[in-house]
Length: 294
Length: 342
Image (cartoon, rainbow over all chains, first blue to last red; front, top):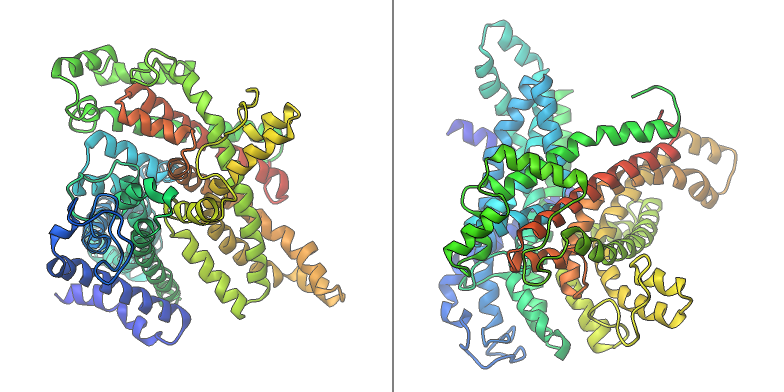
């Protein structure tokens, strides 16, 4: 518990201290947005009946009104209900993708940075190659091969973000490895594993909130993109922003704007929030890391 | 890398060094399409074909051979430029490579259009932002750079369609060409082909169709340009040689345009190389939004029709393009940046 507290709570202390600076303000706006979306994702589906997200629940293509604040879509679903249920779907994919990328990318990055040498060079080359390839295409390929579904899309997306987690973890490990206290631990006779896991990993974990929020916005976009391309989720998922935008496409020519506008705005609100959080945290935590080292 | 030598030698070295990256990408594509648990052919057909058809297709494609044999065959195919024949309903029996080369120009035209839009908007915004540090215009443009970058490109395309195609009727919302006979195929870029043919009317039609997709993709990419140009300009406006120019009494506008700007652009070319991944991913989505008949649409149709050789071919061509572009960018960098020694 003490470990968790010091690693996961301590990074937020500078967030409180820096709350009046621009990075601080951005971070707080971002964090607030993320929390708001999480609350919508948890409680929204409890408050909004799933029946409204089903085909033929209402007359088709009703413009926004008091009964349907965001209108109804081309097959009679309430756009507002779809948007609310879609929040849960997006957050689930984001969580699965980020968690898997962390579970794979973090240890490999740690090992690569710690061991160094040939192993490190090969791993960096592999990860850089994956990173250079269009992520959406790779995810689309994987999604096409392993099939639709929230978990499968999470896996497909993970592949894109493993290189990111790998690279940041590795670079952080490389610089932490040279610290005096690591040297001291070695002099005291600590084994390599002990040094890697309890001396270095301990200090590398601090960058995870930054990588998470920087990659999370992209995760949302990629997941929505896959759904938009028809490679994402099964048709019976009650909310799927990407698919809703794909469905909206047919009616654009008749000037039906509400089926496109609202799901898109939800994506943007969430991604902008996440990138504010990511860039803010990056500005706050990175100088801090430099200061600690100096 | 040799310390000195001709640019050609540098380019060759760079090409050679890119081979491992190409091999890694090709291996990953191979692995995804074959080694992933489960049966890719069955997954692609998704229950639309009886088991004996699935088994027959697998045998026909040699997917029941040991992996090492498949891998050698696969690399052999790519390096001899023979990508096999299509098994999908759209192009059954046709050469995969011929179909891909037929669709490639559309994607290239879209990519060039988007890059032009992104450079113009991104560089202009970056310069305004960088020369007005922390003033309201800078803060606004920095926000623009952050927000535009995380807007879903397909949604932006839909909104631009609603405004400029449906509402105002200025530009067509779909396809690459309409209303006139198609230009004679030379490069496959309709804007270029129509000019080669000397038909201004065709050129305008092609350009009109190109505007909205390029604007959509270009706007999203411009965010990154804005940030990079701004950051580099901030670094160069305070550099010693710029300070020296200032001390000599050269007007600030001239300092920015002649001294700071030029050197601020060099790193932009470097990061341009990183943008191609985002550009091609965005192009797939944009092609779908505007029914733009390029490689992305081809990939989606191939996935739909379980056209395994075509899917593999398209992804491999994307990998070749990405690696090729990264080499070209490095060589250009060597040309314009005197610090790169070759």
